[in-house]
Length: 100
Image (cartoon, rainbow, N blue to C red; front, side, top):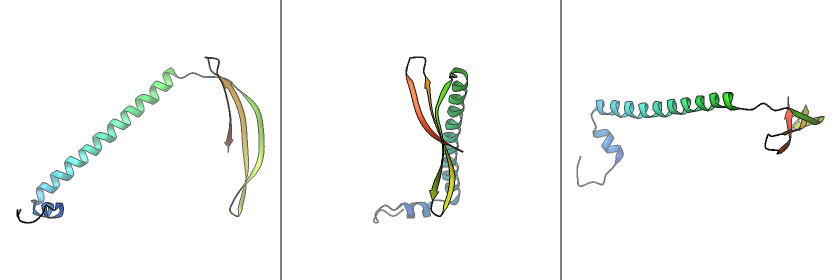
């Protein structure tokens, strides 16, 4: 590389031998693979932990409604359910969700 011109990544890559680019892609690919594998393993561990330590609760349906929802020109039937359940710490959770 010439020292009289400012540094350019494009020129630096062009000056590399072809085998160096292969190694560059291999190393960067391995880094992405390792990151994806780590993310997958930790996600599976979290799911397994939730299955083993999660708690089942019984809820009470407070209200069920049927309505219509307009999106542009189409209309579709919309179902909503309002429910409540109590946690073991004495906290009540109430929520309304749309279901299919």
